[in-house]
Amino acid sequence: MTSAVDKVIDYSVKQYLANFESDELTFDPDATLIVSEKGDAEKSYKGFTGYHPMLGFLSDGEGNPMCSYVKFRHGNASPQVDILESLQHTETLLRQGQRIKYFRSDSAAYQSKIVDYCNDHGIYYTITADMDASVRDAILSIPSNSWNPLHDRKDGFKTGREVSETIHTMNENNHSFRLIVQRELIDEPSLFECWGNYKYYCIITNIPEEENNSEEVIWHHNRRGNAEKYIEDSKYGLKLRFVPCGQYEATTMYFMIGMLTYNLIKLMQILVLPKRWLKKTILGLRNTLFRIVAKVTKSGHQIKLQVNKTLEEIEELILIRERIYQLSIA
Image (cartoon, rainbow, N blue to C red; front, side, top):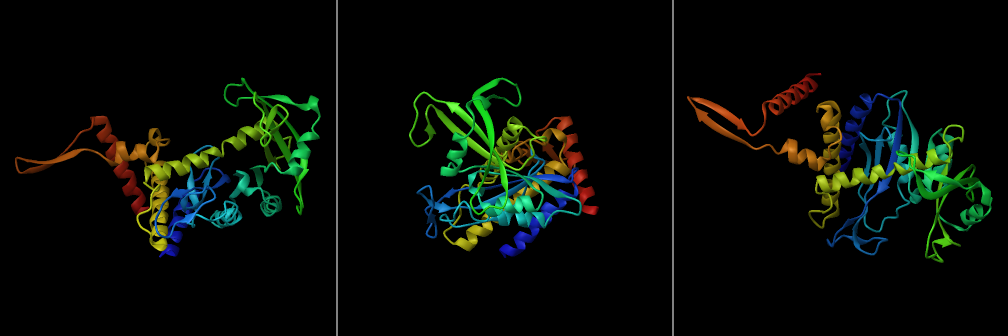
């Protein structure tokens, strides 16, 4: 049964892509943890028992997401597993002429095979780097006079961090890449998180410097936090923070149907609803659109539906119904 739901999810993604204006997309994979003490729950790397689904989201890099990959997993699944598979599966859904231009991920994707795959297939990646010994050596090799203030993307003010970059590579890796480094002056240094008086944050990327400087790469990469917002939107808006039973197959089906619902609602926002609804969360839509107070009355041999909405809101609802009808006959 789950394979059937997989196909419907894929179909919803293809409908999304058929209405996507640009041929260049951004892909953000991320795993999420569901706390549970059900009988088949496994202990996660965080120490509690539960489940560890892997999700992947297609978007324009800013918003209007669609979940293109769903894999429900046991709680002891590694965060590093299934990331490349999520990217490869999503590529199979693209229509002719479309491509994934940007791949963004946290340090779970800091893997040679992912870096090599993106380079070999013309995908620009930004990935949070592990602070291993080789990365630390690369940071220490950066000249002291090459650090510049890091500015906020929206307002342009100085963030208090500094940024610089160098060239780096992984062991057993076929490609070198830019290592974008941020450092932040801290009052109480920690032996395990910083050296000297600074704490460091690193991103690796193959985006050419002539296309995006260090600051622009950081701004672009920071928007991968959208994936966490999409997951939060589904978990809170569709009650996916909890699982209904202790049977793994049934729980898998429940979660996948939930993510299919997520896609259908997002398609509704894009194709049917007025623009003012486009940035609404699923919970917001449930409370303001899907839950409408009405009363059926009978007067003069006529059955009437009394709706607690203004005339403008009722006209909008009629327009939404007409658009849904047009889609059904298209």
